[in-house]
Picture (cartoon, one colour):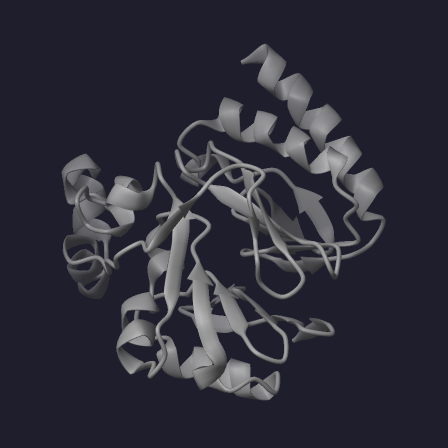
Length: 246
C-alpha cells in the first residue's frame, strides 16, 4: 500500500496475521524497515514490485528490534540480492540479531514445558533455529541516516532492550515498530504480553511528542493517519499515568 511519494507499507500475510514492514525509496535507493517472518521473501519481492520498486534497488535494511517476525526473511534477502545491503540495528539488540545470544522472547530455555508442547512443530523448529544476520552498522538515538530525505532514529526501549522507531523526515511519517499498535485506525500502546519492560516502553512514547508527525505505521495494525498528534498526546497522558502507578 503506497502511503506517499517514496513510502509504502507492505502487507505480509502469515497464519491469519498481517505484518507491516515499511519500504522507503528515491531515485537511487530503496530501504526496507523490518523483514517479516522467515519464508516471506517472495511476498516482500511481490509487494515491492506492486509499489513500483525493483527488489534489486534495495540497499539497506533497518531492523527496529530483535524479534523473530522482524528479522524473519532478512537472511534470504541478503542471499538473493546482487547488491551490497547494509543492515542497521541498535547496539543493545545486535548480539541477539547476530545469533551470539538467543532471541529473548523465543528462547526455548525461557519457555515453560506446557507452552513448548502447545507450539506447532514448525514454530518449535524456528525457535530452535532462528534467523540471524550480521549487523553492519549500529544506530544511536537522534542519529539521522542519509537515505531518502533523512531517516531519524528514535531509541524507544521497552518492547526489547534495543527497540528503535524511525521518523521519515520528508513524509513526516513515524515508523513505530512495536512501540505502538494500530487498532481500527486508533493508536494504542505496546502489547503487554510481548513487551519485556512495559514501564520503560510506555515512557518511550513521550519521545514522539516533539516530532511533526502526520501518519504512523505500526508493524501490527498498519497505518494510522487520523488526528495523529492528538492521539499521541492522549496516549502518552493515559499511559504515563499507568507507568506512574507501576
